[in-house]
Length: 305
Image (cartoon, rainbow, N blue to C red):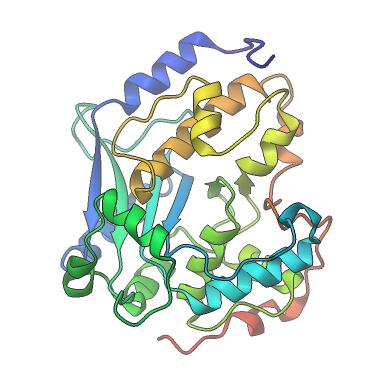
């Protein structure tokens, strides 16, 4: 049974205390410049970044059980979906190495995470999975408001490229089953379809996000007894959602951050090198020692300026 408690109780309570009274900063076209100015000022102090995305579901599926597919075939399926679908939301949670969130000068009275809302998806004409759309609507996503007030991809791209989040070897990215999260953001950054080959995708991922990326869906395979999806893992680790609901990008990104910090205590406290072995490995796209080629920059040239 899991939960052979190797936790540092004092550190856990400190993290929970500093994460209470969390506010989601909802980012739209009208305030994105200001919000990125805040993020730019915080990256050095809070270099751990959990990311979650919301998108219109999955429309291309394999008749074969995904477990029976090779990594390359799973990537081909991912590419087919991402190339034909459109990003809806991005959630970002920034923290320091101990899981403390930015308080933006409130002296700990409040803590903040971010949720970016995009305008580019049009429910009337863009491909989508109807069940996924209904689920997002049930969780509060207003697609009409997104079309009117949402952020344009080109605006987001300009600001995130200069935010300090990307091309930064000191930033640690945290995901849970992050292949889709990275893929949708990558497509938004380049403005073109994903690379044809998985090894090139991993190369471009490293180009933008740096070497320090963790996918907890991969890591739980090495944590005795942990299994399942985000909500299930949170329950097993006794991590409670601090704000919002599931399938809200901001809320899910915070839950990922909480789980990551808890996993560090429970699964990897005895040996930091065990955790570092999983750095850069993305669930579903596991590839040992991907080739890094000098021509990487040529793969990320896109039409968005």
